[in-house]
Length: 593
Image (tube, rainbow, N blue to C red):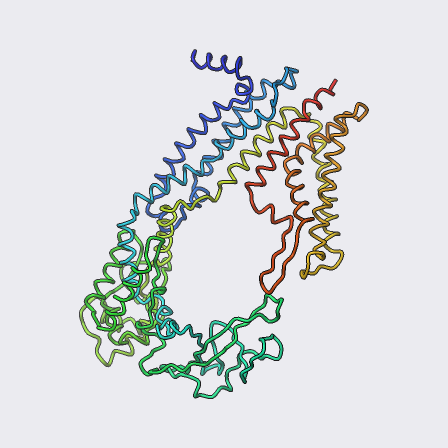
């Protein structure tokens, strides 16, 4: 205790601003909160959170954030009691040079440190994930997940004809004819010319891709679908337009279409693999894909069953709920011969239980045929083939938590790449605000602050009405900069209002006849404005020097608001504006009687 008194006395005599700001006490409280935060983040982020929460957002989703807020409020309240016991400026003590700059800087550092528990907490969760999911071990499990997921038939689109190597290599687009609605369907809208034209593409005299008039000789029959394959080019409607359309340039008929299927394992490509991270090389994906294609082509059912079992084992290791029967899946693949497949496993729907009950079936008549061949080596009889496949395709019996796997791997990747800077600038802005607030009460008159609040509110309403008037008046055209009058006029209007308040305040401080009560209110308003003043100057500069370039879709317009996209510059210029105001405080306080 005596040592603490000696330290306190030493700071008072040699570093009075540090003694007054109590920065050392705040830093000790901050260090304690960091230690507790790291430990809490490590312990709270368990296996269950790994599957359902995100590392970067877990701080705000957990109960720890409430503890941190309460802790900060208690520390700040206790600190404020001692802070306001000693006020050099209101006690008319002589102020050292740059008193407010030093005081604000110390408070800014201390408060930023105190409120930044997000970082040690999140790093604690990251350390936990790194211990649970080590790179080499996890990458091996990802390979098992990819290999097994290809055979659990959860998403048939990865086996779609568009993924076929022949089509991908030729960069072909496709549409197919829907016999029920009698229209051509596809993922995009396409345009084409009935006759070839050599002139520049234009948005005029075109009709949307009604391909119904095309001769059947241009189409390719695959299974029960009629397909059109073609090459496309993306063209802008006019020389200066950002609107574009996909135009068909050439129709292509695929040879040997009898060997193709709309949904076939041979259509799988490396991009069809569900689970990948920055550590998973494309060559590895390619090797896994080649293995999948080889096993399906050679009908290596023993290897496929082992891959599905490995997939199940990895899921169970991380307690991911699932209900899969490798033998049922293999029987389905045998009947389908690895093509004409459908999705027979579903997303997890919180209805998990270990045994299948007839109540799980939408069509109860399917229960007997599935249970007859589930969890046994009995081959599906030819008379049950259709009923067995129909039952699997229309029921929701087999499933696994696909999103839980995805979330687990997202956390794995984020933890090993440290991509968690969500609140980095937010920490500094909060620290800036707290330091800004406590320095205000260091010198300002409370009554003047209370009067300034409604006056400032009324002024903001008038400014808002002025901005509405500016934005509703006049024409606006994006073709050139001169017509960007709304942004320019809005920024200049706000700047003029702010400049009038700041200029009047400065005049009042240096004037001997200015009303002191009015000046007190103006000083409080100018203090609040000061962090924005330098930002506003640069904003006006960028507005007035802005320009527009519009050539096709390379449109660029440099304007004032773009400057505010970088929070680091906003914070830097806010500090400069605030420090500039501090230079006026001594002169202002010298006017008081």
